Length: 429
Length: 161
Image (cartoon, rainbow over all chains, first blue to last red; front, side, top):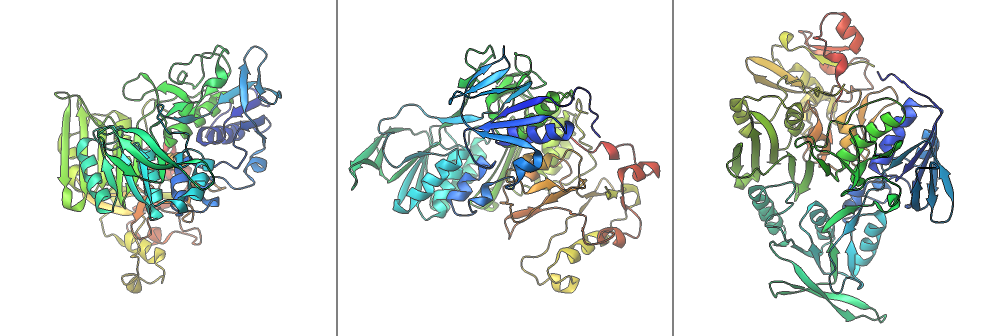
């Protein structure tokens, strides 16, 4: 089990109460039973899962179903929770300032502020009926507005866009997904698997437009005198009539609070392999952090739930004095689209001429599998259809071990089962 | 904490453990009726013959489980005694746990659109699959016992990511 080295009873401050923040707090409490843990979040509610907001829109789960911890979480774990917005971090006097002028001191600080939706300016974005999907408040606003909606346009064909589209589709709304990329979920699929998914979506009544951008949102005055969405004009010249626009273009890390504090920010807050920023005793984890990538070794922002929790655990250990190194983030995505599972890991698309690609397609069964091999090592995979055993392959990627090509060829069409490859990660104890 | 270990060199692939698991996980608790049940109960232990050996995938209740970190609903969590348990109520079947489990021990319940895995049958003293295993390929014991008995290969205690 874990052995504790270091001092107990420090003041830990965690900004943000989502994946990274919660897992860090739990880890710290496990290692330091007398330390004072304070959490600050501008969302004054129980920790919930942002990945579940689309399920809430589609009425697949209740509001309580979004919570990832029960209502006694803060008291049980011994966390002082403050609902507020952190304006500024002051590393010299080891404190943070809230926007109401309150000051909170710390010995170890974790910034887990996550990311915010971002989209390029678009004419008509301030109208009623234009939404984004990130927080539970966004989801509630969409759910409240949805009964007035018959058709909706989702801008962005990424994971958030598709999940949002699914939520609206569940309510009986006719959804058009507009994506600027040549295929769906471009960071977690390839053109062929995207083709399989598009067929499924279109069969279910979605309309998918790729290589397309929305040019402006049209509006009309509604009964309470406000401008409300009436349609979208695309760059192809087409005009789609709709009552709702969901913008799901992408996210940007929330780094405003560290401006002027000396914490180095590139795309996100840059951290070393102990999740510590360039300023001592300030850590960052989750969607806001820019950490090492597992396969390339370069710094990158990986805005995924499993990455956030893992970074939170590592940051929590290091903050509590147990030195642990982060092994790097691996792109891992799982989605269920029209009842068909998709899991992808690592690098899915190599430049032509590089590496070796194994593929198996069965369009009728919505089955697709692709393994990407480089230097005899598995570095990426996509599974559509039967996804059981995907973790065995993702841990093979983690293991960075040489893999027999015949073995991978065998796995391409058969169910992936455990065959004694012990995946206890190298470089991680 | 006790958990189920699998020793490949003892297994002859009779699959009695799978049968015992299906029976235990069925609604009627009867193997004969289980066949008629909808949804069809699924075993939480899975076998495959590969390389002239039988390989089982079953939850190892990792000390620092990747499925717990990947679960976006909080359905996968640790019990107070350290077992990795899954709350079916909270599960939405997103497949994140399947995506990371290095043992392939999480099974998809297609009809329910949820996942499940070995819960060590909390209401039984010894899990039925272990009782059903006549070749003692399955052992229900603590990691320490497993190593001390000389059964293991030194990997049992390090089952975490």
